[in-house]
Image (cartoon, rainbow, N blue to C red; front, side, top):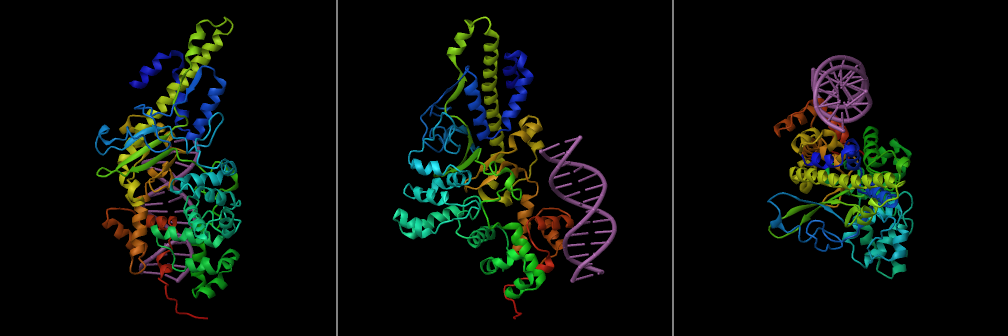
Length: 475
DNA sequence: CTATGGCACGGATT
DNA sequence: AATCCGTGCCATAG
């Protein structure tokens, strides 16, 4: 209804309007910024009124974080997440005409840190960095090689900045736990160990994996399985499986692949994605609430230049046609933008309250939902949801950045339940037995599917899962 | 004979 | 219309 009224006001453009709304919807914040920048540059009818104030309550916004006034609990109904379009700039790369307002960061360091990977990591850890540690982080991050490993010794950095080694190590640790897991490590081993550590928190890992990467990395990379098995006192078969697990789940060169995974090289540039949506916890006394920010590429309001609007009536007759079309285009863009924001807000509001548990407590609590279901609830076309979801990245309160599409993973919750069962098993359970256990928990899936999930999670079949903490055979 | 992985089919999803 | 996912059937390994 609202949509119709809007479209009817600009008669001949209805279809164009819809088409553009859709294309805007599937753009990420970054792409949107590029689009708006281009429009601003080429279309004199558009004007950006920069305004560091909250678009809702018009109070001045803090440099980062939600609007303090709008997030005041009483303004929102209970247990609804707070969702709004945020003009936060710190997650977007600087673009023409707009400067990052981050004064704390030494400018040369920032200039050097402009590469994709370093910036990407820096954004993640920035909130946890103290101001004094920022130069350290910048130094570390700019010293990464193309594999995402640290090329220079920590000691050197410590000396350069005249700080104790421990400080540098702390910062390094922070970096290593940022998104390309293990990035900023001094060696492949170190990167692998970090990845294992983190992996171990969520799923069972083969007992010898740690020892293997620690001491036998050369064997692993040479695929010298027999030698490996001898060194670890396990069968060759197990060695092969172990190597497979490591190969599938770990990456000694964190800089290379990202969530886009195996397809490296190709789109190296786009692989590091900034969040389009940021979810944080309003760590507020009695009423913890989720705050959802939809990152907007501009601060202030994009609008029709009033001067242009006036000028159009007195346009020279040969130009009037052209001006009018520019005008229409500008109006269209603005409307579409509002439409996009509106849709996104509605979508996220619903989605966040639905997946509340998932956001806070992890994969196991993901409620399987399809885009189609959501589309009927929100009364929009399925493809609208699809477009809105595709390509977007969300930052969760735990600072992990995940693709929004993960929220629609039909089997994730079952898979984590499965992982848990296996982690807690007293003896290796066969797939059939696992299926039964899952059924007890209310997950009814076929035995065959258990096998599939297992392999997705990189878990060995029962026979090869013999707990081998103590190997008896010796050389 | 049991446990698993491969292939392929149908239905849902995008 | 193209793709993904769960599942059944069958071959194979142990």
